[in-house]
Image (tube, rainbow, N blue to C red; front, side):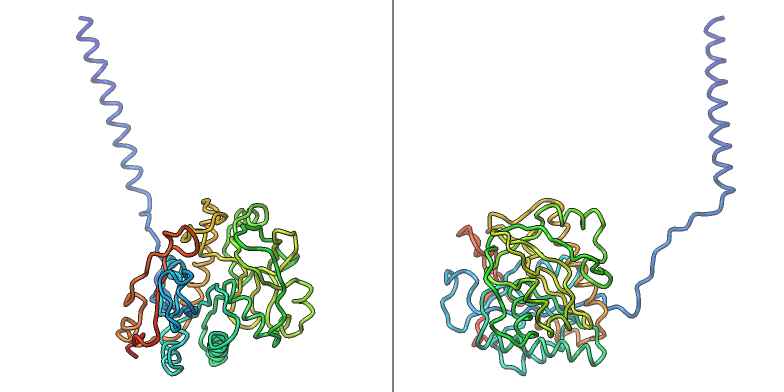
Length: 344
């Protein structure tokens, strides 16, 4: 008899659970259907942007890869930096014929000036000409961004100030640093605009930016030059190993031109210097800067011929492993002017 009662109890429990489930399903069926929303692509944006990166004299490996006098290189970390945010790269080989460089500039949606050491001669003049071309494209109505890193920052400072001797000595080689944000500086329209507040706070408290330079400009010298103040607004400063303060981030007031004395690409893509920060927050900094730059490039109205772009992408070249020596860049793309660098 007890077994019979137990069976009846189990049946009753099962029926109650089934009824509850049935009522729950009926309640769900009477609710309005939930629709997943997705934003349609903006027809005004270019979702296949291309960035021109200017090559630098030398092989990037102190002659270990090439001693040719006409050789130049682009560190692969800059290419990976651009690719990580959804763009491709066309190499702008600095000692190519000027007409080739002009044609290549018409294939891209923005330009990146890299770090390095060359501050005079043909490289300086070519970079100066490309900078002028960037400004002209923007004046003509194309939103054409420029990101200048380390040496690029320094050369823009020299060009805009009209003073090739304006730079000052700093002790900031192989140094991870904090960013000190300029009081009351507006981040709207700058590379910091979409940084999460907590990451901005960490940038000022933790050493999340990599520096590797001996030259820079102090805030006092920057502010004393009317041309620099008219063109750029100062966003951040940093301190070198001797606690001397230099300008570390600037943004053009009227153009999509950003210059940083630090190296956003190294945190995620370089390993040869001992002080490069590789924490998760440091890598987030790399990604946010890359995302900002490429989001600006997507606003470019330039739509070049697709096949011509393919013929000139950096994928037509192979990088060389240069990091085995345990210093400098991990990978570099090597170019020689006589090699027919471009099919244009």
